[in-house]
Length: 394
Ligand code: F3S
Image 1 (cartoon, protein in one colour):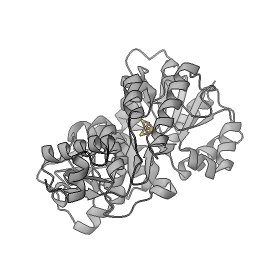
Image 2: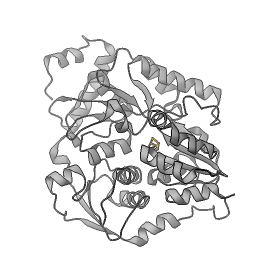
Image 3: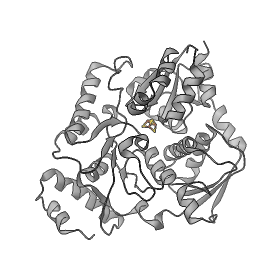
């Protein structure tokens, strides 16, 4: 791997121990994956924030680092709403540790907003072809597929290293040759809304870490693409997908159908909605959760319209970034008047507060994959409207 004189100096420790450690991580990854050099990045998004997932060892590692990040850098969701943690049922001990983690990142110059949809925020919007180092899997999928910017699926330490150095190693999805589709997926029915999350949930299981090229009957919108990518990143390991004639790489490069093609039928999509998790036939849904990935302004507006003037009978979380919540107080107000909670900085998967429920209903294919494994709570799937109806049912 070719390094510039300045990069060599950093590697030799001349810029301090933290930067030396950071560039060592980037160079090691570059060597493993055959990168030719380091390339500048526009921003970084760093996973490894929830105290539930990183624990004391993670806190200690971050606290020992020194210096400042060189590019705008932002955090993945934490284990709690940084303001409403008490209302969520989070213990003071957990809250204290979580705040210490946030402070340790702030000391490094990382923006302490915690979201998996930073692409909605002013400092983190991206354009076609931009190179970044982001780590949350749905955000990675959105960056690569929907925006046409470029990132590998970074781990927390490699994203933080890239943020400190301002560069990442040039391999994987940063290179044209790895962005070509390797499997085609033909969908034989019309889709709308949460159907895209159901499609991603099914497709991810089959395509694994390949790069799928979808042939769809309809043209999905941004939030539908977000849901599709998030679900595939969770049920499989998809970091980049294309939709024929829709997503930016597919529009520019006019990909042909690949030799390997799978077909998805309407009955498979229906099965995701109809599935009742094992041993829950007699169990009532006691939590309904939206916002995996974090809600956009449109999704917040949609939920607010559906809840306007009504009262929920179950615990309802609507997860979004604090910035989106603060930009649209009119939607937050309507949602909260119904008894639902707008939860910022965290989500139903990474917060320990969601572990206290018996059965969760979600409109997200990613949450459907992760809530049972990470929170040990069985989950059912429905459209936004079906989830709201469940929330209103006594
Ligand atoms: Fe985001 Fe949490 Fe889902 S981080 S993508 S809301 S699991």
